[in-house]
Structure formats: structure tokens, C-alpha cells
Amino acid sequence: MRAKLGSDTHTMIVFAFGDGVNGYLAAFAADRLYKLVDCPLCETVGSLVGHGVYWRKPRDGERGYWIPIRRWLCKSCGHTVSALPDFLLRYRWYVLEVVSGVIVKRAEAIIAWRELGAAAAGYPHVRTMQRWWQSVGGEAVRWLGAIETALAQQDSNSAWLDPQGEAAHTQTPVQALLHAAGHLLAWGKTRWEELTQYGWKDRLRFLWLWGSGRGLGRLV
Image (cartoon, rainbow, N blue to C red; front, side, top):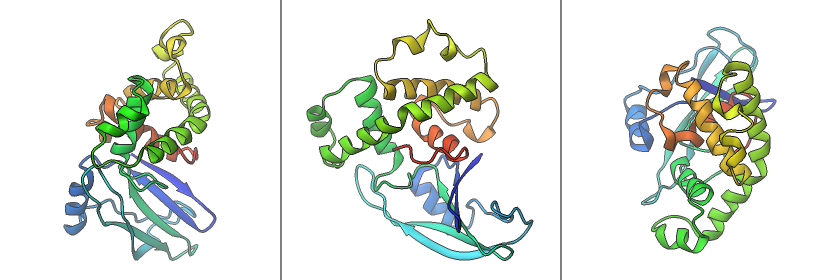
């Protein structure tokens, strides 16, 4: 499964990668990473050639990493394409697992910021976590609408669509987004083999992967 984000001159493919940062670095070193051949912009077959890498510097709860992101150039249209593993967000310095953990704890366990900050050894400052929360809160209703539309089209019997069911009992848009993402993931696992390893804790990662392919833009 892969998803696409882009501009007029560059496209970024977000692809499923379940082995985390260290697995990615090992796969990169062994040349076993996701490879592109056909241009996703002009759709010319076999037109992509290697165009080096650029570097991301994300952190987890323990350390920072240098992550090479592969890039290709289309010989036909001249645009560039890169491939981003789904454990990285486009605009954040921390790996998605860290960001997701904060958002889920805040949304579903209703943990106070003071407690989150005290428990987050090696994690970002509370203000950073609050920015994540504000960002996803600002996007939640839009993304939730896209999920519900997709479920209505692809899985119309989903329990999430029951007006008297689970959706009626969520307390915030972010909480609703996370629960709806779980239902969308359950449907997605019946369709894409790459999602076999995705579980309940991976809802936000799956949502980022899925939404990127539908032009939904920023999530967090």
C-alpha cells in the first residue's frame, strides 16, 4: 500500500513500512527498500531514475537519527519523486510512534499535560506536545468526514456508521477520529496485505498512510 502527496514539481509517496527506524536503516543499507520505476505524476512507464537522497533527522524517546529518503527524477516530465516511510510525518521532528502515543493518551485516557510531561522521559517539551494536539484537533473534523465517506462507500455495515453506536459516545473530535480510524483500519486489513502487522496502536500511522493517498494533506 502506498499513498501520494505532492506539489507542481515534486511528489512524495508515503509507503507502509512496519519495521521501524532501525529496520529501515538496515533495509536501506542492503538496498531492499521500496523502489519506484513509473512516474506517479505523468504516469510514464519506466521513466524514473535515481536522484540521490535527502536527510530527515527525527527523534524517538531515546535518541535522534539520520534517515535517508530516496528521491527519483522523471526523465519524461522532469519532476522529482521521493518515498517517505509511514513512521515519519511530513512536518514533525519526532517519529510518528511518539506523536501518536501522546495524542492517544490525551484523547482516550484524558491524561493531563502535567502528567504527560512528567512521564515522557526523553520526549519533547509539553508545549511541543500541545502543538501536536492543537494541530490534529484542527484537522480532525475534516479527516473524520473523509473516513466516514470512505466507510459508507466501502464498508456500509461498519458499526461506526450506526448513529446510536460508538460514534455517539465519543467526547472530542480527536477521540472520534481515532475510533473511526480503527474501523477504517479493520476494513483496510481485509484489502491490503501490507497492513497485516498493523494493530489498534497503529491507527494514526495507518490514517496518515491512507489519507496521504487521498490528498488530505496534513494530519498532525
